[in-house]
Length: 303
Image (cartoon, rainbow, N blue to C red; front, side, top):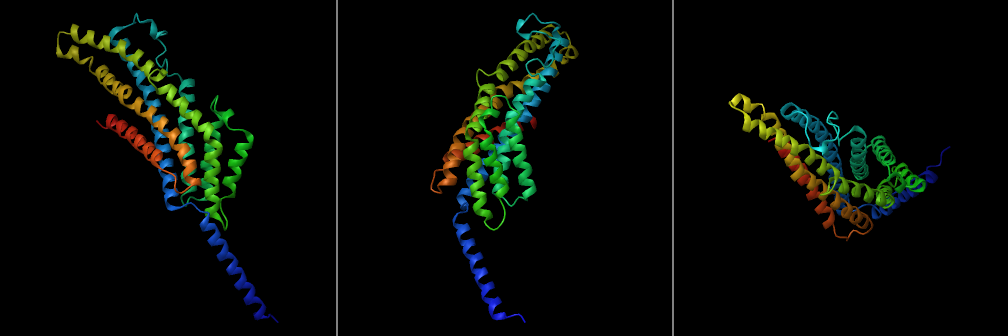
């Protein structure tokens, strides 16, 4: 015969134990402000990474179009900077584009992983974001060495442990672990983006090398034309030049500023998840930069 007097106290004790764990876990969970900080940072990282990835691919496509337009309008150029003029994607060749977009995709994957940790994401989706994050880093030369096997193991373990009774506590632990262990690698990725898209970076210089000869060819066509139909031949080239000059003057600087802001925000994020009173200004600044980049791209595309 079952003795209810022994079962009820046991159940009561178990409920008290669960309640106590809940209180303990809540005390170790991310606060509302900390969740907001992680969310804002993560969304900005996704915006910076995805937008830059998309723009690099567009720049490659328009480089091919500009080279074709220049050959049609002016034939072979005497500009030695163009090198092999039959290489239409010169400067934006597949291997280089793959490396650059690998870095920008890794930044986006980093943001998606952190965002998944502070939302009610299913464990399978969280694991997928984490796998993408680790794989992205491992594919980039000079960056994969920034994450040791021990650091990768710590990140993987933190992700695996999210769940169960202390889920909120484990989410905070996972966020802290990922940001701390990935800090040097994220810094390196940001440095690569700043280097490639900055004032002396290859992206800006290569766009100028392609645009200047095309401008000369389009201008000569306009000056030599006798009719409006003849002048209209230069119209597609002028449109390409307009769009890509906007990219060079507006988008590239915003990408660089965004990467610089992300470096500062990433350091602030680690402090924020460890200390609820930490200033979030760097994270807010990063969000502003990312939004500025997104707005500039939309202006060019939807003009």
